[in-house]
Length: 254
Image 1: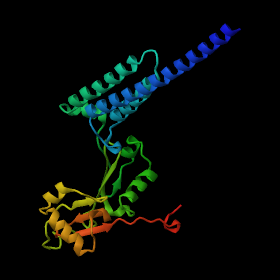
Image 2: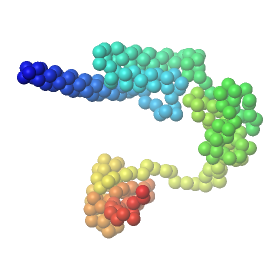
Image 3: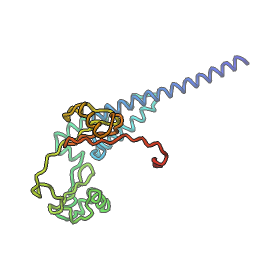
Image 4: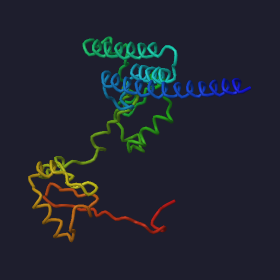
C-alpha cells in the first residue's frame, strides 16, 4: 500500500514537472519569437500603419500570426521560425526590386488614382478604388473640407489615404500672399521633463545650468524637481509647467 501511494505521489510530481517545463518552454519561445519579430521588422523597415502598402500589410499580419504560432509550438518550433525568416527576406528582396522598377512597383503596391479634378468626380475611379461616396465625404470632412466646391483635386494614394488639393482661391492665405515679412521659425527645446534636466537640449539651445537655475528662481521655483515640463521657445522665454500632485478625491475624474 505504501509503495502504491509513493508511486502515485511520484507520478503526480512528474506531471507537475512536465507542466512546469511546458510553461517555461512557452515563455522562452514567446520571448524568442518576439525578439526575432523585432529583428525582422527592423529588416523590413519601419512604417506607420497608414503608410503600409497592401503587400506590406499582408506580410506583416502573416509574420505576426506565425510568431504567435511559434510561441505555442512545442514539438517543432523551428518551422515557424524558418517561415518567418522566409517571409521577411522575401519582403526585403521585393522592396529592393520595386525601388528599381516602376512597373513592378505599380504591379505589387498599386498606384495613385485621381478621384476628382477641376471639381468633377470620376465614377470609374471610385469604382476602381472600391470607394463609396460616403467614405469619400467623411475623408474630406476629416481633412477640413465640408464644402466639396472648395476642392480642386482629390487623389487616392496607394496607401489608401486620400489627398485633397483646394482651389487656389480657397486655400488659407500665407504671409507671402499678404506680402508680410515674418521671422523664421526655430526649434523649441524641452529642457526639463518630469523633474529631470535635459542637459543636451539645454546645451543645443545655447544655455547652461546656471541660466536655467536663475530662470527658475525668477519664476519662484526652487528646484527642477518641482517642474513637470519646461520649454525654451525661439524667443529665449522659458515656459514652465509645475508638477502638481492632486491628492483630493474631487480632483480625479472617474
